[in-house]
Amino acid sequence: MIPLSYYLVLSAILFACGVTGFLIKRNIITIFMSIELMLNGVNLSFVAFAAHWHNLSGQVFVFFVMVVAAAEAAVGLAIIILITRNRQSLNVERVDLLKL
Amino acid sequence: MLHLILFSVFALVCVAGAVNLLVQKHPINSALSLIVVMGSLAVEYLLLGAEFVAAVQIIVYAGAIMVLFVFVIMLLNAGEEEQTEGSRVAWLLGIPGMLAVTVIICWALLLHSDMGTASLGALPGPPADIAQLLFHEFLLPFEVTSVLVLIAIMGAVVLAARSESAPEAKKEG
Image (cartoon, rainbow over all chains, first blue to last red; front, side, top):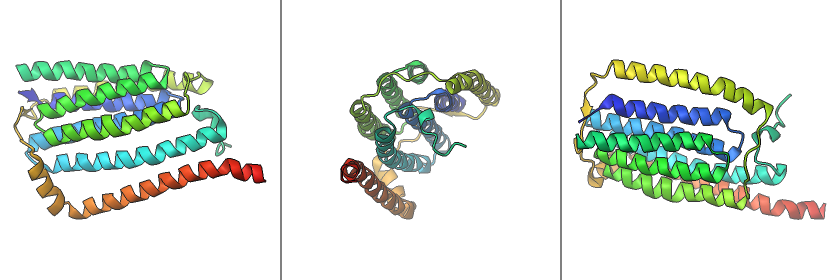
């Protein structure tokens, strides 16, 4: 029998790793993967709470999160390909058109 | 006891993969460690009795999304990321800040650890029950996600088509 808080701690650690990657990485693809890591951390706490409250709605929500992640990956990677063709670089600091 | 051992082993693999994603310089190594994270998360879902979510995690996340990532990394021939001034500031501020937040959240969660336990098979989530919920109570959100996926497909096609026609337009101009 595993305490629910262990799952929530693992979920928090994964989410924090995702946020850290989002902050420290300069490669646009790795930043995108950090976002996926954050979504995975949230999914884990959804499933853990679904098991805790004996309510399957949590698992249905995980399904919706996965659909959104798949849509985001398809559009985001197309945008990454366009940016790379225009800038010849994957570094996010080269994409500074909106900077003053 | 066995559940706790399985949980601990795969939680450690999961966290190691997540940290490896941050440490690696080359995006392909980060993508492979993200696949490790997703695989061990699927085992955690199985420990919670969520077989459907575990299967979808492997098929959709590790199968479809990560293959898309690896394709794009290879298509763009991505090399090692370069260090810049901004990334050093982010390292100095980001890592201690996120470590502090994580420690506070974990401390708060473990302090109030009387939230009960989640056991193996405590909530059997057979696909039939999930389908019942998905196609009755969540029918409208489900249909809305189909529109979302349609828009995503159209967006990806429009972006990809423009990237092919752009060099021709340059040549003509």
